[in-house]
Image (cartoon, protein in one colour):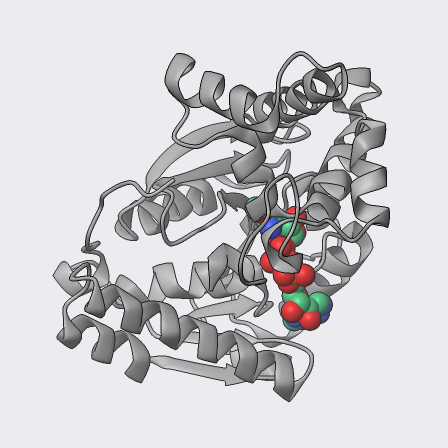
Length: 304
Ligand SMILES: NC(=O)c1ccc[n+]([C@@H]2O[C@H](COP(=O)([O-])OP(=O)(O)OC[C@H]3O[C@@H](n4cnc5c(N)ncnc54)[C@H](O)[C@@H]3O)[C@@H](O)[C@H]2O)c1
């Protein structure tokens, strides 16, 4: 998934520095915070407990340090990113943010309620971005008194490495918020793909049924994990095999995403195949448990 892009040039290269709040210090919140901090914007990360905030900040710093060690980021830019980074458990700490990017649990009512709370806290110009994978941007925006400032920005995982963000316009998203969002995301050094507020947007609408097809092909004995991954990479030109990717995403997450899209679309291609349930029951979730479709020497996200 690595794009080869060594450094991004956003705010540091002349674009306006904006204070950015990131909600959620998990997989995506941390990855998005890295992306934003690396582009020169000050970032405050909010999660529900001190432990989660500290865990997120530690993984963000570790990722930036590794970037310097591998020659992908200058020490100066790492230092600038780290100095602009802070964490909090208080939603009120996001009061002066120009942009708030939400990457909390995939729960529409929770996301809608959170944007409703932010209405009371943030200023009249603040942009509200949701990183939902499967929910409706319009549904999430319905919790806000300012749905015209709510926009879907779907960062692919891992956010600091994949050079793509889908910008999804809800039914109530305003022109100005849409325009400012595109400008902000491009300022992070990302390519923008514009999409409508449809289940899975573009990326997951194609990816999830394809992943399920690969799992069904494996169950049917069409090939092995290795041979299917080889066909997908060498034959189809994908940057990594489907089973390699599913082990990074996690089988539990794949099931949740797949099932949520199935529920919205009622299309059987999105229904998670039974092998996924058996793997989850066995604890074979992928890299994070040390075994998924492949086995790993160490358990941990991205092998870290
Ligand atoms: N993991 C992926 O591959 C991926 C890719 C693209 C988009 N997404 C989407 O990104 C979002 C986050 O996914 P994730 O994989 O990072 O989940 P995660 O479980 O790793 O992290 C979610 C974090 O949000 C925190 N949280 C929950 N409620 C909160 C609140 N009200 N305020 C602040 N923090 C809160 C949790 O404590 C947790 O640390 C979801 O909407 C998901 O669909 C995930």
